[in-house]
Amino acid sequence: MEITASMVKTLRETSGAGMMDCKKALAECNGDMEEAMNYLREKGIAKSAKKESRIAAEGLANIFVEGNKAVILEVNSETDFVSKNEEFVNMIKVIGTSLLKSDAKTLEEANEVETENGKISDYIISMVAKIGEKLSLRRFEIITKGDDEAFGEYLHMGGKIAVLTLVKGATSEIAKEVAMQSAAMKPLYLKVEDIPESVLENERKIQKELAINEGKPQDIAEKMVEGRIKKYYKEVCLLEQPFIKDGDVSVKDYVAKNGGEVLKMVRYEVGEGMEKRNDNFAEEVMSQVNGTK
View 1 (tube, rainbow, N blue to C red):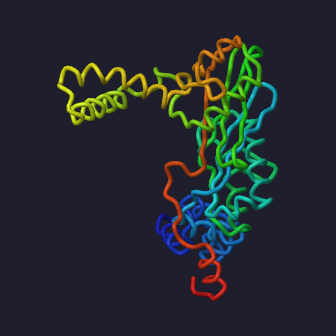
View 2 (view 1 turned 180 degrees about the vertical axis):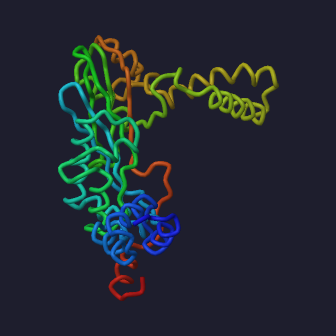
View 3 (view 1 turned 30 degrees about the vertical axis):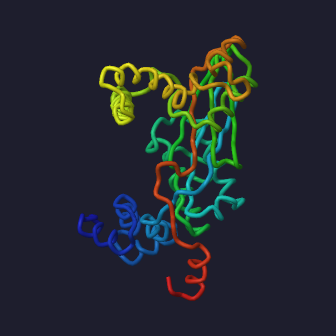
C-alpha cells in the first residue's frame, strides 16, 4: 500500500513521533493507522516523543578508554534523581563503549551506531519508555593518540564534570593533573590561538571602556588594554593559567618541565549552556500520583 504524506502527517500529529518513525510504522503496518499507532507505542517512540518538549539538562558525562582511543560523552536526563539510576549509568556505559568501537564524528552518525541493544537512537528511545524521562545523547568526541602520547581523564562530582586531555611526551599522571586543572579552573580554550578574533575584539572594547570609565585618558586606556588582555588569557586559556599546585608557573610551563606538551583538552560540564528545570520535582511526582498531570 502506498504511504502518502497526509497519512504520515496524521500519524505524526496523533502520536507526536518523528516523521521518519511515522513513515516506517505505516509501512510496517501496511498503512493501518491504528496498528501503526500501536507499533509506535510498543517501540516506546510515541511515549518518548511526547517528552521532546521537556527540558533535559541534568545527567552525567563520562570517559571511556581502550588502547589508543578514548571517547568523552554527555548524556542528559530531566532530573538529577534519574542520573543516579543504575540503569541510566549502565546506558551511558553501553553508549560510550559502542562509540569507542566506531568512527562516528557527528550526533547523526552516533545515533546510527549499533549497541548490544540496537542502534543508539533506538536504545535511548527504549530507555525513555522504561525510565519515564526524556533522555538524550547531547555530545561526544572521540580522540586517538600516538604511542608517545598519553590521555588524562578526570571525573568530578561523579560525572557532573568530565575532562579528557591529550599530552605528548609526558606521562598519563601529568595529563591527569592537567585534566584536574581544567575541571577546577574552567578554561574556555586550550591556547591563546584558539580564541576567536571576534571574542578578543569584544574583550578589548570592554577593557577600554572600563579604563575610560575609571577616569583614564584615551591614550592611557588604550595602553592598559593589552595588559588586561594578558590577564584575560590567564583566565580563559588552559595553557596560560597559573598551575594550581605551583602558582609560579603556567600549565604550559609545568607540562614542558615534565617533558611534555598539551595537544588537546575537552571539558564537559553537564547542562552548561542549557535551560534548567525550575519546577519542583516532588510536586511533579505528587501531581502524577494524583492524576493531575
